[in-house]
Length: 112
Image (cartoon, rainbow, N blue to C red; front, side, top):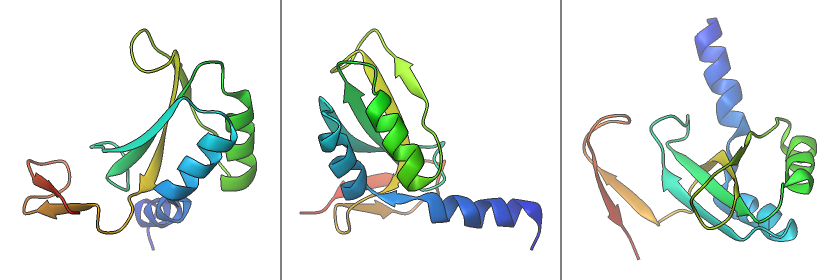
């Protein structure tokens, strides 16, 4: 297995379900937590977690449990001043991608 394939395998192992991100966010008093599609994430989705204060507890817990650190951004617009984006997998049955490929134009359909 070459280096690129090995990095991809290790990255996919680090992907966590959105429900887990949501639980940790709630435990650390996040203001808002939702998932969105991402062209840059190896899973195709990221969880956006917003905090009213610097999320030191979230960052420490995330690194201890998941095994990698998060980047905290201080933003001027949004639901709260601090935001964290983490790669995640979305809950099954919530989104259906129709045609296209990751990074290209694709239709996205929400499924009830």
